[in-house]
Length: 411
Image (tube, rainbow, N blue to C red; front, side, top):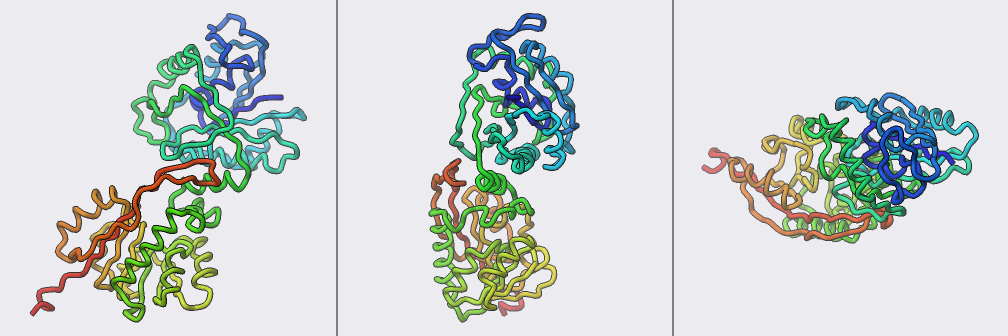
């Protein structure tokens, strides 16, 4: 069995896979050895594939841990935002060259690593091996995932000597990354674990983990219902409360509701089911197709490709109210609200974002006044991705804004 570590950059192999790189099978029994000293116990051959440049390093059975780290050190580079997975096909070819008919056990990043470049590589590596008959399950490092707590399958607490070796490697060879400006590659305490944890995941679970950490691009839409609105108790409570909140202020015959960023229509379906006419907008074409096939399939819901800026610029969808529900997290400018063709804005956000982004603008704006605020759902801990991980859902507060009359209108 050949252990093969597939990482984005050379330092990743040491930070998350040091226990795999050690010459003996049991890392807790390995003393740190200097170059030139014999390894403790039987040696193992380990291959390391560096995806950013396609380099393949072979750590021979006779190499001590110190020699292995020295070889990796020669490949540590400056931060490079262009570093990326070469894709499943290229990875499959590289892994086939390593195997040459021998069984291979592959270790790589988590698809839910918050460093998106690593998460994508972890997902691509598993895709590359998916078509290989009788392939060993890929072992994903938990890695850097500050918002999730994982249920792991293999935990390797490192002895003090190996922790010291990891810190020494960073200080000697990757110190420039400790004060890097790169969010992807900067090193700090949380990215240098003293216990290495790994898990295996089937295709569905893995892709859901990858989508969960995506933003609004096609990667988020790579699985249906990536945020588990259909099955989450928390999300169902939030959506039901949001529907009831809107219904308290607007009757179904008040006029169309313009739902911005409707995703796949979890809220849309609830509002339409209560008799409201909903014009649902969704820029992402994959989400929009699912929206059209779901709540929009019978014609009771209008489906549109517009984003917030498009709606403000064109003013083509006037409505009794605009719904900006859990979507103002991506740098949208509240000053654009004045151009929306409506006199009511229903806005829902997690409390911290509400306090930092929206309240200062509400206090300063002359265009809108706040006429209601309600807690829709409080924070809760919830399992995700079939129980593979859990996280804290942060709660949601609804704020209703009404357009102030212009001086001419007030006369």
